[in-house]
Length: 294
Length: 244
Image 1 (cartoon, each protein chain N blue to C red):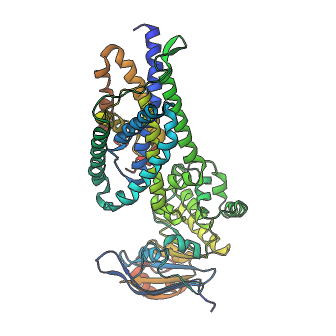
Image 2: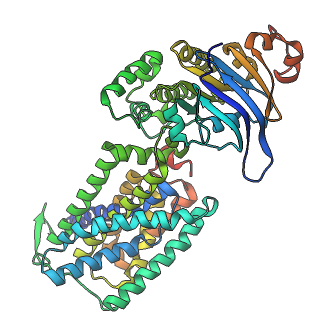
Image 3: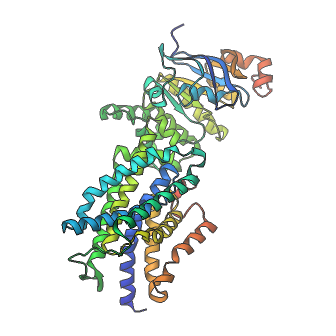
């Protein structure tokens, strides 16, 4: 592998990893707050991608402007989904049953997308879609940089909300010790539903970032759920920094492996990492002390 | 005697369809007093605290705080009424700093000036908390974590703190420190309702002792008297009479 190619792959890997980090952050948040395995997360990503595409087709504006609508919309859907559906599940079997429930939701979203937009592959046409710039001597597509920027901005905002706001403190406290959180006066039921909304809001941003540089079709979410689940297990379920580190590592590894192995085989890095994690460190590599309780 | 800060009267409580754990239990906590509940496993000691903090609703009986009836309230409302519950085992938020933990104790307080005042106060009561201010709470030793939990519970300036097995999992030396801190809380004006497995040690720190058995208070009285009672020692305090 030439050094130019290596550098190119490395940069693309970092950009990809940033996007993965955002896509996985919501998934780990649901699990952290509510022990919910949200199979429909990637279906919501694709839904957000379709809404961005539809918005651009209808208005001719930049797809990122659609976020002004989809982020609040997804937040609201998340809150309602948690209040009306997730809370109906029995606490004892919540995690298991959430798989079935959200699997059904994923099917509904896929079916509705197919019904509304047909199964035709869609791609957002962007003015800057074909342009690329030189970064440290490597050619990088502008659209990948934009998607990375969007992901970084969203993750930065998520970090800010979790670390610096009173709601974020309450959410982290609920993740780390639910009973103690209740005993300091936190309304953990409300926090959980807003946490779910926050997770789904990240899906709005993530799906839009994804659709900037990808061809989308209704069943695309099945392709994503596996790698995203692998990322959050490797990172330690419930840990957002863990998910971000795992996403970055796996993104870079995947990108580097694409050169000698091709794209199909490079994809297996997620499953290899998943199996290795489950064998040697089932609580995840980066989740720290919190993850050890799961 | 002055009005008790916390009065539980005729409490009946249990979990789900299982038999009642508490069967007509009554306990009173006077101001500036440490009341200690001791008794065998399954006597319902922890259940008393869960009822008092609103985590478990009683099926019968009344809970009063400084004379006001607070029966049937939620944990948030019990906290507002002046009851703070410190759970069994570790209950710090492990991935947060000591500072974040303590400040979360005043989560429902909006006035920052009040929060700062209370932060200064709990740092004075628990110096170790101030020393470890910026460290992650989960990395502290067991005894230090307990003190962070105590400090967090005092941030609401409760009338009564409910302590569930504070010595659980601690070595004897650390246990002694933790009990010193409990006495300090009382000396700073907070009454304490304490539940302990380590009955002898707890009664030595307490002012009043209550022996629970089969969901009722079996015997109660000044803690030194209970410690001195040879019959009680044999039955509930591990066999050895006081002073041995």
